[in-house]
Image 1 (cartoon, rainbow, N blue to C red):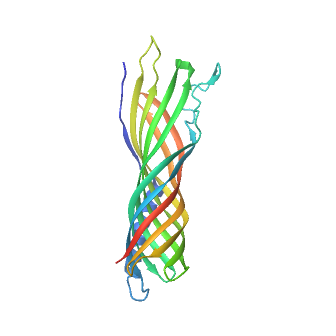
Image 2: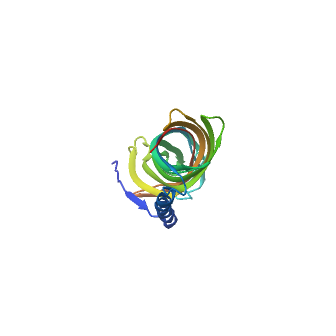
Image 3: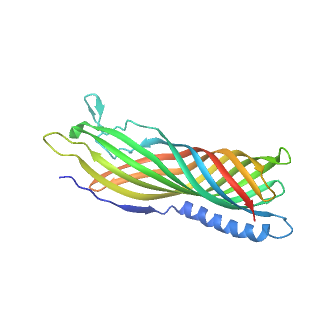
Length: 255
């Protein structure tokens, strides 16, 4: 008989919680200081859209799936895919300040979705195991940019940032049918993983009116570690690292 169990788990990473608290305290401090006349800061709000390639690499079960024995042409439990690339897109917004040649902003982006699918030969049970996962990621980043004027309307920016990433992982552990012995079995699990994140990139922006500016750019963003499973009554787990290369489009309005 086929069975399924759904489990939700929130991993509370002390480092990530510390980073999140630091981000909020930094933004409160910046808001009070940068809005003073001494800094002559310009506040802005910016809706943002991202499109890019997400990479899930260094995929491993750390020996938690299969026996590890060589059975015929296969190693039982050896994952076929070590690296996976997928198209991802996201949207969100940022709130920040421009002062002199610098810009700082607090950015939140929600991304949907990255497919994390692997096949695992399982000759010890005479079948193949598949693990199919959907990864949704929300990042909260504090970004600092150095701006350079290219012309009266155009500017270039170099940006670096740090923050936290929340990865929501919904996965299915599937043992394929063994004809005449056992029907296909599926076990499900859902979990949240919170980890530190960082980014670096370049962009170009153009003033389109006195208060509006359009921006496009490229960035690399590290989105933390992933873990899928376990799938009760299956005790295995999958682990991987998660990052993305993105094109970012935004519109900024001075407040």
